[in-house]
Amino acid sequence: MKVSAITLGCKVNQYETQAMLSQLEHTGFTVCDGPADVVLINSCTVTAQSDHKVRQTLHRARRDNPTAVLVLTGCMPQAFPEQAAALADADIVLGNSNRAALTEQILHYLSTHQRIIDIEPHSQKFESMQVTNFHERTRAFVKIEDGCNRFCSYCIIPYARGRVRSKPLADVRTELQALGKNGYREIVLTGINLPAYGQDLGLTLCDAVEVACKIPEIARVRLGSLEPEQLSPPVIARLAAQKKLCPQFHLSLQSGCTATLKRMNRHYTADEYRMIIQNLCAAFDNAAMTTDIMVGFAGETEQEFQESLQFAREIAFAKVHVFPYSRRPGTRAAELPGQVSKAEKERRSHLMTAAVEETRARFLQQQVGRTEPVLFERRRTSGGFEGYTPNYTPVLTESAEDLSGQILPVKITEASADFCKGVLANF
Image: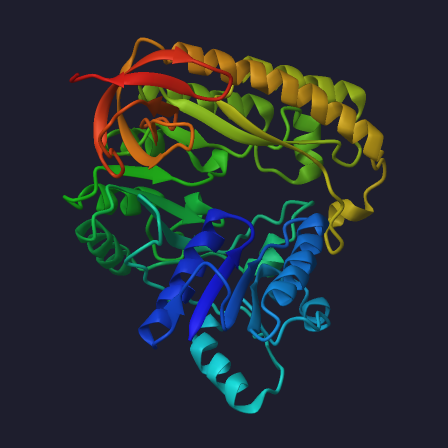
């Protein structure tokens, strides 16, 4: 039988989708991109808009695959089981805690054609998953941590993911060794709250990074999104000792205003965030700092927004995901006073986006003249090959040869609004 998958949301979801596809492949299913007998939809629920997208995706999947078995899993069913169960397009609804039963549930549905709703409470143990191949990818994502204990006032994720759980270090090593032997030169360690890795095992994120960097076949190790306040000077020093670790850090900011951060229940001030950025830049050469910034959070005044805007300009991020605050039922922030109008959030989003586009352009211009190792991923439709430097600068290089999957030195010769161009340094 053929199975296809649609992944909504973060890199953790991408990893989990691949793990579920691997599970199905091992039991005889064939993974495909087109019409399928089984369509797996791995959902996100980070905002109310995310839930709307899940519903749209289900409808579209049913329209495109009218006789297929539709499986809905991921964060939405786990956080909102009743709403997920009410989505009639889904034949099977699974939460985040019992995906090991995926194959069994599909086979059971095929034999009975009775709708299945199977959502269990969060486990206190890390969900056992191993991935050895990623379809059509040159880098591999490896989930090493799940859950979050932070309870930011706007966030539903602790309810969708539960508390912090970590993959045992021996399992991390085994998975990375297999990926290295299968030809992956770069791996990305991911988690829901990645810096919390190991706190339930008496370990730290540094332990996982050091294990990854010791795998001979792996040339690069990259980190997923990070909560900034856990990057203390000793942690940064230990990370900087690992030469395979890429100098690109996605430190979730959300706001550059301390008063707003406090209402968000973030665990740092703007001054503390600034110091963490300075420490990272001092420890890593040509480091790139990327982030997420939310505008229009409940109670955000014009003065607070201006503080956040100025902070973003000051830090001069390499890239920023700007998004307006979306009220999420079930969170404390949804009931806070001072909700900002849609029009005002759009205005602030426009201003913030314009500011961070300027800082990105300056960052890319700073890369011109440097010679950097580029991991090439794919041929662009317009010609040439696209790849990424260690600090995740996208680089386009012309070549008659297939460069996919290779790490080659490139001299960066020019920068545009969103990527750089370069020539192979040995030509």
